[in-house]
Image (cartoon, rainbow, N blue to C red):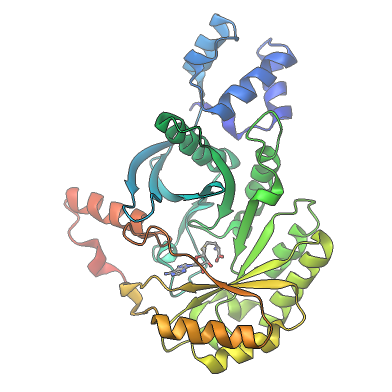
Length: 361
Ligand code: SAH
């Protein structure tokens, strides 16, 4: 078993290097190289024997890129990664005028069970380590460096597969390492964390001193509709979830983003827009409307352009700040978990497993 160095924070790395007989400044050099994605052989300011030792006993990045798919529409890149234990996860690299944003996975699969989300169809295999989250960024930066346009990942959204607050300790460890000036040096203002609304963890997270943008996947104007599409809503009432958002706003001074995926015949009626405006009144928030990426496995469909517009206008008329999320990578299975599912299905077929899709609920 190789030691995963990217999973260590600077203090842990210093302690480890000390035990290897290396002074503290060596661990600082090593930390910087690891986060730049340089292989051990290229860490030229480290002594040769130390480099050979690292190569034999350690792994520089627990994540490797298995496949990339680039959208012809907007250059959005979907990434399929392999982890050290053979599990496969995915991410999305989006290019905006202000820089590159990487959407990270925080778990292999997800156990939240949202009806419209492909990530959760096979449940959760395990949470990712902080090193596996950092490793996704290091991989994306290496791809960008190879393109030679001087771009690098500047913004992070924890919106890939998994529920970040269901993998609380590793996500918090990840965020603390992420902002370290000798490493990736990405500040909390450049990070969004999206949650389906785990109330106790949201309240705990508000106290961590990590003022990221909190996005709440609300997707419903009331408990009844929310419970139909999100099992987590049976555990936490909407009033408590919104109250946790208010606490987060108070503690961090940051507005919360409310995510609302419009699902035909379920939550997209204009009367539901008025109801939503009513529950959000007075809250420092911004609503992000997401036209649903259809999930045929569950028979859920997106909405027409006309429905999106009507819903948005109803919110605006009620004084709610709202935008429609730009759809990116529409041609490359951009929605959470879709690419990983296709990969797993195809691998199973190749292994003679038949059509795995038929066995799913
Ligand atoms: N578990 C976290 C983050 C991962 S999902 C959460 O629930 O927020 C990131 C966002 O994509 C969430 O808002 C999620 O509800 C949304 N999403 C999932 N499946 C979708 C689909 N088929 N179409 C549109 N949005 C989807």
